[in-house]
Length: 275
Image 1 (cartoon, one colour):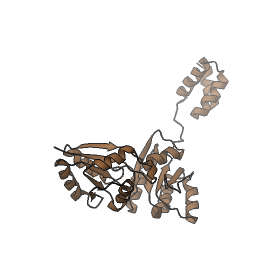
Image 2: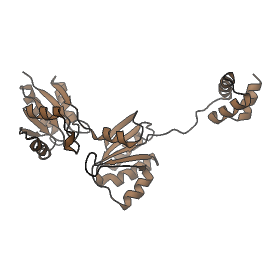
Image 3: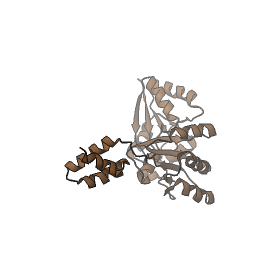
Image 4: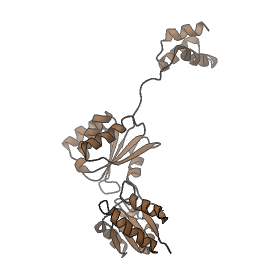
């Protein structure tokens, strides 16, 4: 009988966010694949749970992935956890899920906190459409290739960042994207949780003088195309005609459409009187 992989979300800082399903699942699985066993053992000790653990992280994921899949194929059930939050989100656990899927192994999920979703919710920026970009590369060429690909991205942009790279990152963001609104969300659910809503330019000034600490999520305003759509005179006159049918005078319609299209009011007025 084949076992299964259970992707288990864990707290991102506050142990009060643990769910009953998370506790129950960790207590019943055969073994746990953990990003860092030293971190996970603290959580297990808090729950008074003792389970065999396997270290599964970026630099051993290929070798350990095969081993974990073989154990699951042999009938064992494995819980996949990261150091904090949802495994497989900007996390090597994604590879293990893929390996299981390729082998036809059942994968289920126990939902839990996710840092970037929580940060977006309190950012005050558009949450209707967004793109999560994970961590930027430490290599300058790759960083700028990545950022340039987002230059005209109209959705809200989300990054994870570490405090020692934070200042360089916001300077690079300002250089490529220009000055935009940004929410800097750090230490979510912890004692020193903070949301700073500012602009990239102001953030550079602030954090050059006062270095930031803690785990950070950056929520950045998407690109705004402020150029007016190009209209022909005939199109402007047609729009104005529609306004006249709704009760506007020729002069009123000409003024409104001129403002919206960039075409001179006098030309629109003339076009309307010649209809």
